[in-house]
Image 1 (cartoon, rainbow, N blue to C red):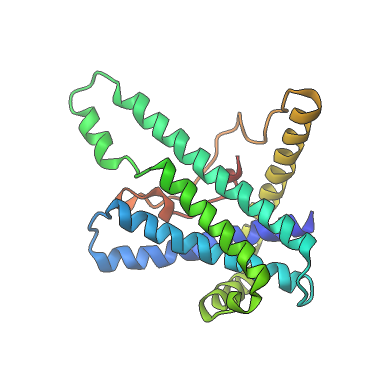
Image 2: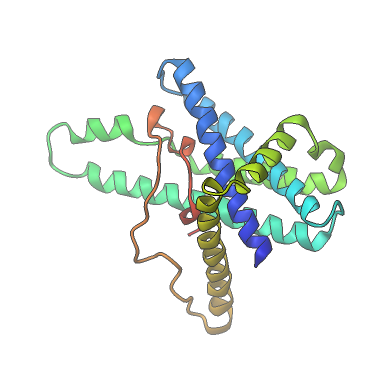
Length: 228
C-alpha cells in the first residue's frame, strides 16, 4: 500500500511539473493551436518520461536493486493510470457529442473549437509504446538513468518532502491509492462473482485544476480521478 501511495504522489507531482513546463511552452508559442501530430508527439514524450521516472523510483524504493515484483506492480499501476486517462478522454468526447446535438444556434461551432483532440488509435499506440519502454528498461536499466528523468525524480521527491506543498500531493496520493485498490478489488469481484463493485468516486463530483489552452486537455494537472 505504501508503494502504491508513493507512486500516486509521484504521478501527481509529475503532472504538476509537466503542467508548468507546458504552460511555459504555450506562452512561448503565443497561444497558437497545436496540430494533431504535435499533441500526440508531446504526449509520447510525456508518457515515456513518466514510465522512466516510475522505473527509477522502483529501483530507488528497492535500495538500488532491480526487483521484478516491484517493477510488475509499478507497471500494473502505470497501465491502470494510462487506461484511466483514455477512459476519461472518451467520456469527455461523449459529453461534447451529446452537447453538440443541442438545438442552439452556433453551439456546434463553439464546441468544435474547444473540443479536445482525441484519436483512440494514437492513444493506444502511445500507451503501448510507453509500456514497452518501461519493459525495455528492465533489460537496459542504464538507459533509464538520464539527466531529464533523474531531474524529474529528484524534483518530485524534493517537492514531496516540503511541509505544506508536499502534504497536498500526499492527499492526492492517498486517494490514488484508494482508487487503485478499489479498481483491483472491482476486477477480482468481477472474476469471482461476475458483478463488479462500484468504483471509488463514481457518484462523487471531482475537482480538477485544468489548463484548457490549445484544445489539448492533456496539458493540465491531473489528479487521482484519472484512474477511474
